[in-house]
Amino acid sequence: MPSKLYLSWSATGQEENRAPTLSLHVPLESYIVLTLYRYLGIDPTNVAVHFVPCKSPATVLSVILPTSVFGSPPLLKSDGPQQAEEDAFFCQLPSIVVPQTSTIISGLCGVCRWLTKHHIAEGGTFSERLLGFKGNTLVAPADASLWTKFCELDAIRCVEAILHLTPDTDALPDEIGQLERHLVQPLKSHNIFKLVNLVNNVRISSDEEHRQLTEGKFDFKANHRFAEGYDKTLADLMLFICFELIVRRLGRELLAEQVPYVAGWYERVKADDGGMLEEVCHSTARSDENAQLAKVQLKQVNIRLPAEFSLYKADTKKLNLKGDQILTTNQAEVLEILRKVDDIPTDIGSEVNGRGEANLFDWTAVPLDARPEGGKLPMARILRKRHQLEALANEVIELAVDGCIIVDFCSGTGHLGILIAYLLPRCKVYLLENKEESQQRARERVARLGLSNVTFFQCNLDYFTARFDIGVSLHACGVATDIVLEKCFAQRAHFVSCPCCYGKLYNIEHIAYPRSRLFQQSALQLKEYFCIAHCADQTHDLASERTNVAKAHQGFHCMDIIDRDRALRAEELGYRVRRTRLGQENCTPKNRLLVGSYPREETVRAR
Image (cartoon, rainbow, N blue to C red):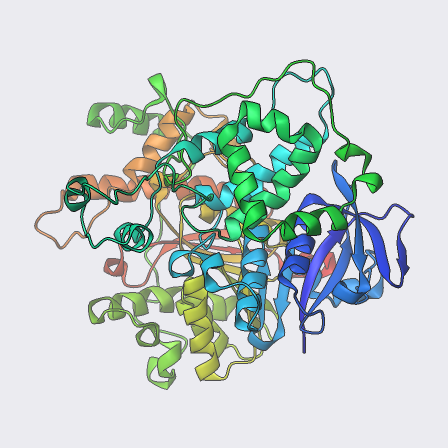
């Protein structure tokens, strides 16, 4: 059974599906995937393209797709009977459904990585070097990698802005200047001295040995040839497809004058395959079919070059709080903030788990790969992980009914979701994780167990759109817990959540703190709320002699404050929420548990 590649298309009434070509309008993400698909020579009998209608985006391109390359892709209808049947509607597009491994991959970089890996596995023209050192090119999700974010989000935003330029526009998108500044940086590489030895025919293994060379020194700036370093990778292909549109719109001369390093990079990528990728771009989105690609004559050009910018750096900045908003852990100030919390008319706290050591299942009857031992945990962590898993699994067992869909968000290597799938064989279990390596380990465990009720979603939380009945998360980091809860609220799904990393809360586009109306209307300022969240991470093992017991108890209280705010948000939406703890509280300092149930009758009626 072939894999299915789902791409968005915009219905304009001008579609033509007559051999030998299919003509239609698609958003930029679909265009990038289609161009890469064609460039890599993907066989449509192995990976079948399906087009899914979308609301007309601000920017669409008219594409011409030869049926000899793409086959005859079906154009799905948004109001057709297949909508409830197709995996296309489980995630934001683009996405790929791989039936052999029951996996759905969503997100531009994830889909492009999968196509590249498939090309290499099928003995394609291009080598594994396209995936970079140890195959890690664009492997990290956009919320953890500047590179993935730049290729998946920033470059798209840049092209959209360029295609909507008018002659009076004086400032070009910042992303062009950012890439210029990155390419100016000296080359960095994980295996830098191996590369130096290969390129310059020397044998060195340290900076000191390189400095002592009289001949054969490596020029780290000149050898920053491609986006990620010395070799061309998938990142270059994706960025080239974007910048080829920019070149058509602005002209090569402007780029050469304003951003010479970007212009040089563009020419190197083009020359590397003899112009093949550029030709694929031109034939897929023809200039005579796309008026927005016509060259624009700007009256004035201004490209802002940042003083410092490098895509080599990790984006560790989460809280954008400056000046008088700097977080404080001064104890006197913390106590003053906690006194403000005392004035909020609500109860703060969590109940001891009444279940104790009694479980609704027998660990001795659970096979190895459904136990923590199957996930290759260190022996010292296995018992603690068992206590964490059983606390959440017990709650899910009580909430579940035959046929329901359970999602393990941020599932990692599958500890919780696999256990639930084994214990509840008549339920469907979705394991959602954005880290490719972690999910591969989970797939191997599921395969050894022979479970047939598990589907894998490799994507960011925001990309997941499928219907479900119960959402679970064990130590989803920081704001991820609240994203999970919002996913549950949108589906009126029950939830079982054990939060983690309270200190990593920060406002994002669709999640703002405080969460509940009651806390929003209180005297707490945003910086004070985040201070409480920061203190909630000062919980430590109470049995340790090194633990500041008073500070740890304050941390537990701060966890209860943040979780009360979360529970109030759910209660405002009609949920019944229990604020409890894991049965064995010493199995982790982050031992609070939120269990929310939505009235079953209303849930069923709404669906």
